[in-house]
Amino acid sequence: MLALLNDFSSYQSYLSSVVRFSSWCSNNFLHLNVSKTKEMCIDFRRNRTVISPIVINGEPVEQVDSFKYLGVILDEKLSFTEHVTAVQKKSQQRLHVLRKLRAFYVTGF
Image (cartoon, rainbow, N blue to C red):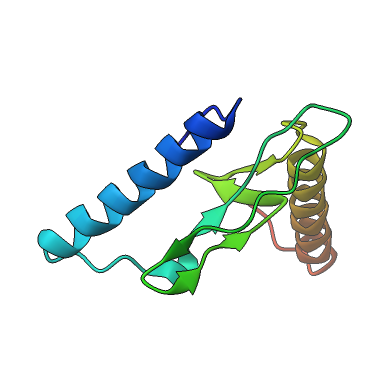
């Protein structure tokens, strides 16, 4: 769910949308796993406002600074530094494996 929160009324609208979605899930026999649900606030202001976590079915939703969505790591400033670091680390590990295979004269790579 995505929302632009620029005042208190938009925040109230966001909370009501979350409640409607939660009740829609329960009415349609879908289990919403709150422990796997994350909330991330993207805020470019210098003085960030603290937002209390959303509560779904009596459980608070975890607020995170970054998360992986469809293989891309998104962070709260929409910079791709963490994603690039993860991709670089993964490629270095794969290069290391290829070098070990070449040391044992394994061909075809």
